[in-house]
Length: 130
Image (cartoon, rainbow, N blue to C red; front, side, top):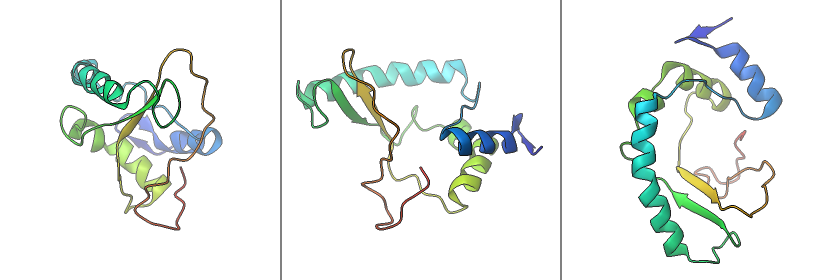
C-alpha cells in the first residue's frame, strides 16, 4: 500500500474508481470547518436572496460561487500531501481547479443524479474524468 500522510492512497484511488467519489476522513480540522461555516453562512444566504425565489436551476436549487480566499482556501487542505497525490493520480500532474462553487438545494427539492459539471472547462472539447 502507498501510505501518504496517514492515508492509504491506493485504497482511496480504488474506491474512487468504483464509486465515483471518495472521503478523506478527518482531513480538515474542526476549527477550520467552524471558520468556513461562519464565513459561508452569510455568503450563501446573500447569494440565495440575490438569485430570488426561482433560480436558474429551478425552485429551491441554488448555485453559490465560493471565493478563492481564506477561510475557504486553506493550504492545509489544498496542499495536503495525500490530497495532492490523489488528485495528481486521478487528474494528472497538471490538473487545474478552475472554479469552486456549491450547489445548495433547499428542503423540498429532489435529489440530483451524479453528473459532470464541465460546462466551464478550461479545456474545450476535453472531458475530464469527473
